[in-house]
Image 1 (cartoon, rainbow, N blue to C red):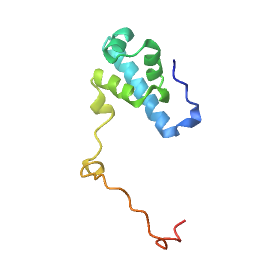
Image 2 (cartoon, rainbow, N blue to C red):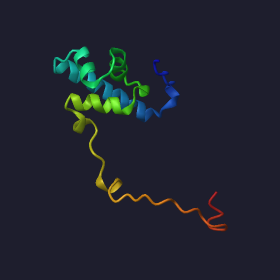
Image 3 (tube, helix red, strand yellow):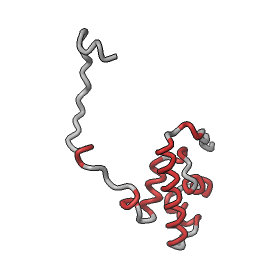
Image 4 (tube, rainbow, N blue to C red):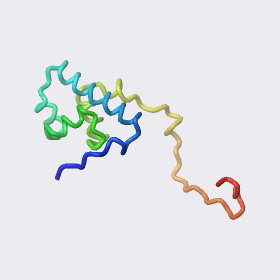
Length: 108
């Protein structure tokens, strides 16, 4: 069953812009590397229709497939650099404590 196409308003414009850029990168690198669409599809394990969706920046294609295509083309680190270690290192799995009654009642 094909995935539903998301309406343009389903994703923020900045996200859509990045997906479109990733799609253009995938298309351009595939052409530059003389890689046929069917070859790239078989290496990623997707259909031709999904590749067209990737190259068009369709947000419904899935981030994992976008990243897999960028990896196969050898441009993952250029297009999606690893986030700064401060953003993810030392992350704990503690639950957030609910504020006790009377704590910060004026916040909302």
